[in-house]
Image 1 (cartoon, rainbow, N blue to C red):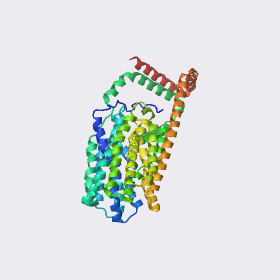
Image 2: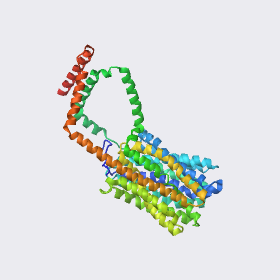
Image 3: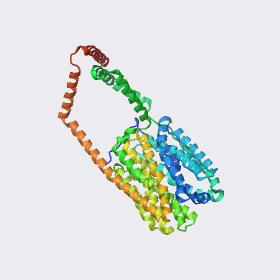
Image 4: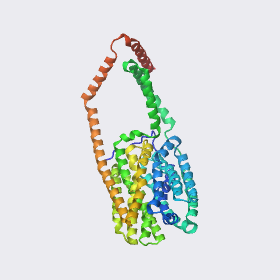
Length: 509
């Protein structure tokens, strides 16, 4: 069972108030970040005809966009730690708009890779991570619900953008559509303006100082005296070098906490998600082209994405409510594992759908499974590492995931080009996701068994008087050895006694 994670932010999140405005802004940013690569597939057929390219080549556009969105995670995390979420999201909105407007003037597929894939993808990266980070700063008890509502922005956008793209394409062509989409993406700047900064107040810090001031001052002076009395610390040059190295590591860890790679739960999450993303995006990217391949008209094929999105709209907040219940929240990691395996099972059964009715049924179940995974994708990571380390965690996770996100759709496109059939692509994605879900379930069970064992050993050690007495005796013996009589330590001992007297005098005041 997952242990509850208390607030480690230094303040109590409001769990409401302006936080709901933040959720609304996050739903817009997250919606564009997740939906835009999927909705862009409407233009695949036309771009293939214009540039005379294969399925795998055209799939690289969305692959580069998704990989840049996730690979830009560390950049986004560093900028958020340095400048805050609001300016980062607004700058990301400007990048998105610039990328799509530039794409309208492209004359080669390589230029589309740069403008749509890289520039727009980087803008989406600067929208995604700050949005989920801000939710963790405003919510604690209601965090799963808030995450579910914010993630619901993705299916809402998909439900709107998929038919809108088809309408724009029919009336303005792909170049005119890209210009209009660039203007629409500038709404991310409006969403970022809602991200009001929040953090621990200075008043709460000041009230703690008088209560702990005396003990802290006394302890600090005593520790300084102990350090001065120890002959090990006499070479000052080595100490200065160690302090310099420590300062350098602390500066790096201010932006990205690499100590997370020692966190067992984080590593399990990372491996499982890297495997999962190898088959996560390809089915939704190729759903509309698959429908057209079996003879379904363009508007009906685009409507499949709308059906998926409508189910997804209901699935994400519902999953958030279920995950926030007292029965599921302590076991949320297992619920997440089940959702991934359920997603993979849908893809394995997709080749059985050879008619439009079958694809509608597949879209309904796929929308349900997709919504469940997305609603808990970041909540489970925050549950493992805590809100304070989440900024670094999400940056490190996304840079690792970008490789499989980049390769997933082109591998699917290669399978389609090789066999001339879409079923092998769906089977590959299904197998990969079932394996990822099974891995996460087994390893999370092992992780929580180990955590319970470690907690039991710690409590047993604290309750055992022998171990406590042995530790105290060892500490006393070490102090005696380091303070033995000797002429070379006489000046240090006198200085230590003076410091001790100062500490006693300070504590008596």
